[in-house]
Length: 598
Image (cartoon, rainbow, N blue to C red; front, side):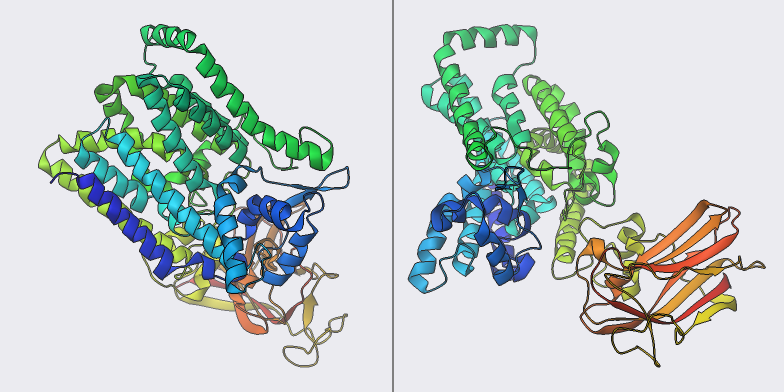
């Protein structure tokens, strides 16, 4: 079949569009699930600030929009010492949004929506533009790969990237984040680089400069994109000498590319100067890089957000460097250097899990380069015996199915907890469509008792009727309940002696009531069991109670099973912490039991 890669592209496009329109239309989601919310609203702030409110310095409109629509808990800006607000994120993504923003603004006026920059027409327009950009990048990647690999190989690569990796999530649903936009910028940069070295011309030189500048303006670390036009095709000293000769011949074109890249980057410098009075502002404050200790193992293999855990199909790309070196020797060095450097920069960021992310979302923009070793592996597999091809195809189908399951659980399924995943919880939910509610405890503790309890002994009980502080609202049971709130962050510590005998486990159980649920993950109230030997903490087990209190007014009996430490300890403390939440949690009928496994 001819042009199979074209059919592959259209299949990927149809699946992405069906997912975006029918499964989870992001632009229809409320509050913090809307398209323009959280990080996206930070990248986007430039546009309403300039074109609607004329307020780049104070961003006063942003607070009222957060209140009106509930698109996040804080404005994506910092307060500069000079007094004005500085948008945390650089402005390159806003440039990508500009045509879609203008269409949304027109739609708001035509269809009678508030022309405030955040109403439904803007949400829809930004989503549609992001989808278009994502599919354009995939189409360009196809055309680039066809220069180096057979059509059927390219067809498989498109399917693996678009449907088997987190590219699917960040094109169909979270497309307004920077990743698929940068993915497309990188495909354009690759295409222009290849064409420039085929026939050096002013247009391609200028476009290369603009694209490098735009990538860096979107995410400053993407200045590394300059490595593509600098190093593409360099595989020997002879190639380097030829490249230097070509640059000397076309020095004015190179100067134009550099000048345009600097000019685009100057947009951010001009913004900082206008708003703060300083040419350079580090808007990420206490967030930064650990250049000497990058989080490589976590970035690759962590259950929290490991790249190869949540996009395992990219193992094929890692293995593909060996056949790439044999089949396309001129490409392997620049591709390998770029991929390693990009991964190093990505994993050096101290927030290496990148917030609520499915796997390593910050690597998605490098996939156009990773596509080369991936294609080399697929090409190598096609040349092997049929049994290897069948095994590879089976694995690929499994990886795609896993990616669809994972994406579903990140949305309607609800089992995937972005940025919170643990090994115990991952294996508890893997491949399942639903699990018992108590499974979420494994996000906080790796210890789970699933057997039958034996030799149960009551160690402590307290109904808090004589608690020294009266309950501020109606008690759960009886006349009084203990509570924690904004003023009372910690409960008293209830101390016990080691149970002795054949006890292996401790079960701490109480009834909890949340008049108002705390929704912020980092402020969820906690039940903590601590084992100490003198002043040394031997072991500490904890669960976040808010995970099991699903809504305002929820009341539930919750227990924590804690495996007794094998290391010697002298005392046990049970207590509750409100984790800096200002909301009230009531606690009643506390019991502590020891037991063994039957």
